[in-house]
Length: 297
Ligand SMILES: N[C@@H](CCC(=O)N[C@@H](CS)C(=O)NCC(=O)O)C(=O)O
Image (tube, rainbow, N blue to C red):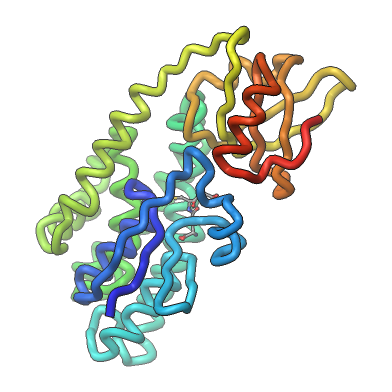
């Protein structure tokens, strides 16, 4: 039985799913979703996952997203005897605890520290740096007691946290201050099947992509960039757009208060297209690309 996995290859949550599937011997059919052109916002994707995120799996008509829920589902359904998700309630609870630690503390702190730098070209925020370090210090402490993150053998929590922490390689973040984490990362990288194909290669490609995205905007040329942002109208003519995630532009924020910026709402309110210049032409391009643009303000 093969299951479909909708994914973006550098995404941590997606890599955690791929590593787990590989480890458990679950065959997957990888379906790439181009987040940069907003493929996840197309009606057919939203029908499957209204939360429009990757990874999402389609297991014979059963759709599931949230990577950690996918990991436990795969283990429960396809490898119920595998100690990677122990049956003993207490051992399992420790794995669950670490999965929650990852989503709620570790990966959260990592994203809050690194994403603004990587995707918005902002300077490192010392408070966010500290919060990430605090989370890492906790993990360091856990790893001083056990050789894997949730015990003395590999578990789903290792795949989740490995995927999270390896993302920081895109930003050349060093874990040198954390010797236990460093040793655990090295060990896991050699133990996890197909580690390089699932992680190193897409992460390097993503790193190269970010470097190459030194876009030069020409306000006289029609242009559309997919951004995830918050917007507010400051005056009737002027819009403030605070970009908090963009896959297409690192210099976008320089134009974010440009009074010529227009908004097309796709109905989901946070995903908008910023239009600069020849709005009509750009709008038809947007319609072609995602087929969801409904109005222009
Ligand atoms: N907590 C979720 C996070 C999923 C997530 O944020 N995915 C990002 C890529 S890493 C995404 O799909 N972004 C596009 C969107 O939300 O529209 C998980 O672990 O699966």
